[in-house]
Image (cartoon, rainbow, N blue to C red; front, side, top):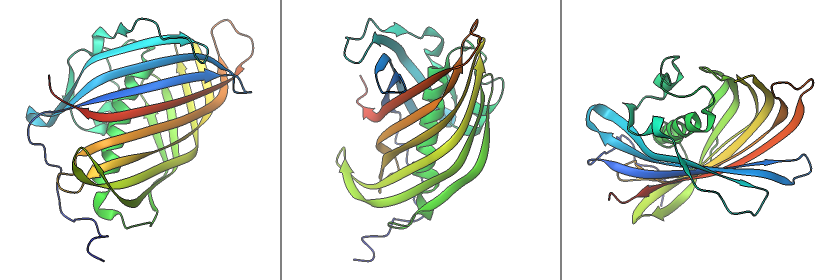
Length: 250
């Protein structure tokens, strides 16, 4: 029984050729009382296991809707992300020149890259350090400079292996992650935001290959937003939910 509830050690991430994922994230902007004002859905196809340890994006598109229940409009493709390819290293994405082909206001698109790197980091890099039901404080007071956008501080990132499950026919470790009370500042396109971020989710990691078999992401951002031409900032709340899952190659 003790062996069954210990994670296999020394297993490296096994890329048996190219593997594709679909990442879909829905942003809901609401009033302080919870009335949903606007929804925005961005999705894209992510490929890993490419030559040279590279990854790539394609079919990234965004659709918008007003209110809580109106249908989404036609999705608008983000051509600047079509074929966007880079070495799979989260640190590289924090360098000033990394997003040089992206419009300054492409915040959601940057988040796709950063969130995917975060999920892989939490699920794969810390795998050997996790013990059942024992919280691991992976990052404490870590300042992150987001080139062209602003700054973020991970106050306390906690990872916890909470059990075993199955996804896509794979025995998986189920890992919780959470980080609350994180200061966030953004300044782009004449807009400025000062807020706090709370984010959390779960990651299913294959015990055999250490590949991500499924992941969820939730984040609540609450703060003050000042738009160009406004004299005073306005309260702003954005809740987002995301699903990261493997898809079959066409």
